[in-house]
Length: 155
Image (cartoon, rainbow, N blue to C red; front, side, top):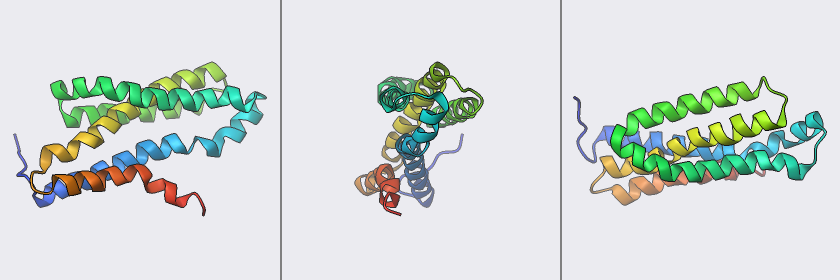
């Protein structure tokens, strides 16, 4: 099996991948405000009721991030990132075909949150596996992905 030396050029590519992973996970979680008006209109529902969809998503991201750290030790980063990506993509695509509040909670909130939780944990741990000297710098760069889309709020 191919191994990567610590602090190598390939390790910085892992750092960039972790940055993009965390930017995507938190960006999707924060972007629910864009579609909330459409969902409120389509379901003829209140803002408080529709906001439970996004709240469930955020809850399952951080709830499943704890569980995924145990699974990550057993299966490794690549399998966890691949499975998290597949779960997220399938759940978000399925959401486009349902016009039911309960189904959005199940697929966007729970399934999307579980997939995002897998990605969130893997993105946080990736830099610690491949860096020794520049571990703090690399993890800081990767974690800055969580706030990347917050800068575009005023545009």
